[in-house]
Image (cartoon, rainbow, N blue to C red; front, side, top):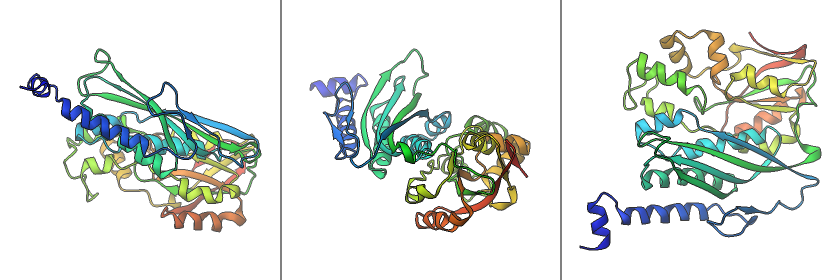
Length: 340
């Protein structure tokens, strides 16, 4: 009996582990751009700043995937949560006009198998490649006393760069600006604690069940990848007065973060088609409209604050990237965000 056969008989498949490690190494290597420096697997990731950026300013953000991971574990599908994480972070720094240049991940596991880890990293790499961004490093921590068997958590940090004079802070927003809403691809990565309770506990469905009225399974609907708005917005960043990534806190909680003192916003519910998953959750969970708009994105994953004469150009860029948009409201004198 060979060494590999002895370990396999004891429950450890060394060949499978080696294959997964090769997949992980190939995935990470595929993301290296011309800005990458240093070696793969080093203690620290190295990245050069892109040339031609005046007064380069780093923009950084850290986030996680939240309890959407529990849906992925339940479905046994782990190749998309990495994409969720990267795209979420790209959107967070896009709000400030930043170009993504590097990403680092942190994966904490109990006794998760190497196949699952490889699938997660491949998802991370796929999203990094889509944004011409280097997966510069990461950490996989085995913490069996902190996580249930088969469970894990995933978080990441993104590094972007923007010219200091071009960064978006919301200070350019004025009364009369138009709110342009960008279509979401579902729940994105927020509201899953409530969504899981409604779908799995109150409706009694499972990941392989048909989601009522959706023409897809529960797993397909709940695991739709968090959309990146980079391609839709980057070409027209100079036309934007502000951007708001609609994540936890919904439209009111996030749009208000991008408005200066003296400017409020009115958002009209009738201005865009709300995807069917949201009224389904609202009805089945007996959730009030106010709570829905505070927890979920309600079909708008990003909102741009745009001068009136730039709206057509901004929407055309989104159309070219295959992302639907709608004028969903405007900036008014005052403060706060009203949804009417």
